Image (cartoon, rainbow, N blue to C red; front, top):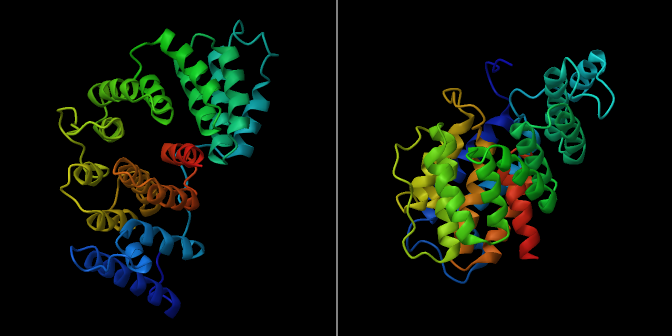
Length: 324
């Protein structure tokens, strides 16, 4: 809705607090400004964690980000019921098999958007019944099973997808994610190298680059590297620069805050969405440095943001479970 001509006083204070917080974080994160051993100062040395906690405190004052292009659950269910799909086991041979599969997949996406990954998996299995040779449906099934933390089921579905399409970027990305959380570093490195080099979309390839770098870091590679290719424009480029040591953690706060500006036209890169991703990758960097307790704090802050439809949310939950 349009911005009012004047904000209420409370909103002005909140806005000022955000600006002061960002300035304070940048100042305190500079070398030599924090007192070692003081827990409060240590928190301020972790600017993203402090920013995430501030966002959590003011969550009710802001509209929540929602995944783009996902049908609402009620509407998706209504469209499927109106189509009168065949009984289970009879869909693949029906005239409208591809249409029914798409409707089941839309309903699955609506379930997943609500955080109901079990319900999403049920609908995707129905979609697979309609199109048993679709690698894409199997890949989607692997994804929701991953988010449901059914890693064995995700691996089985993804392996079946890769049999149908061994060069699938999404299939290799999911295999890499499974290898990563299982700490199979050599396999994860190989998978993410392929994803980073092969994804036609430079932005998605950027996330492959991030995971490629982190898999090397967690494997103990002294000098990690990125695949040589033109980097993405906009987000998540600041995260790649952070990995290379060209951005500090404090300097990430600025690009993250710009996600909520009207000038940001990049889809699904709101401030909370950028922060969700940054908390994961920076948290993983802490773990690679030998600070898993700090990493757990970052993952917990990520989960509290409740950006349920991002891969990093599922990865963070898996890492929290391992850290326990």
